[in-house]
Length: 265
Ligand code: GDP
Image 1: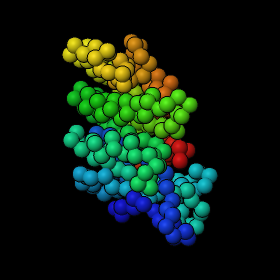
Image 2 (image 1 turned 90 degrees about the vertical axis):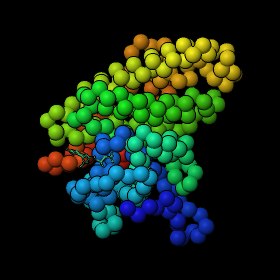
Image 3 (image 1 turned 135 degrees about the horizontal axis):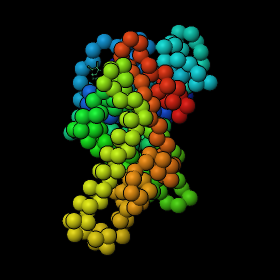
Image 4 (image 1 turned 90 degrees about the horizontal axis):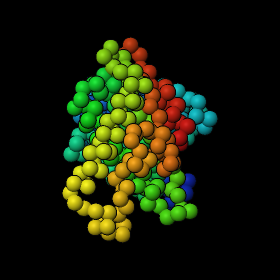
């Protein structure tokens, strides 16, 4: 992979283009590296190895956002909109890379336009996998929510939408997209309850937290609601879509993800 963090504009030396970027996240083993490689090489990838650091690749869609990931736009000479795909490691101890990216808007030559969160739909019915996946997703969504909630009124930041890419649906034990969505919502709701209870049990009242901390600070979605639904994040201008697909299998089914990304650039 060729890391291209800053894309220098040769025509105007000393100025550089801020490339729109898409953050690729999700727990280890969900298929991020395989997906990244597929988009980069435009053909079914070979085995990948676990990544320990983020890596970025410059990718392109055509101006009308209708091109397939299989098209080599440079070769065909089609005018293209370029973007950076930033892959981050999913291991529990390395998730800070993704969190840092969520705060790095418009700096380091990167403007974050969208987040793709890859989940393993074939493993998500296992309780530990669901718990780990949802915990990571909770932290990503909460950061995006705080980004909007903490903005001064009238100065709302631009929206960053999230795609939950339910991967590995080529495998027979994979859950369909709808069930991946409802299972994640249930688990996110459970995490939300547990975390707010933890705060109350610790004896820290809202008053003790100081002026800056709101009592609903770590509460994801509609405050006080019984069940969590992704739709509740619209209040914070965060659109969450869940789409099933597969990077491997008979043939890759990632076109919906690619189209979704193209629309958000
Ligand atoms: P990462 O840790 O999220 O980067 O995950 P990887 O891309 O390394 O993928 C983990 C494993 O899942 C690898 O053995 C991949 O070959 C496999 N894998 C990834 N995507 C798919 C898929 O759509 N279907 C199947 N059957 N296996 C997949």
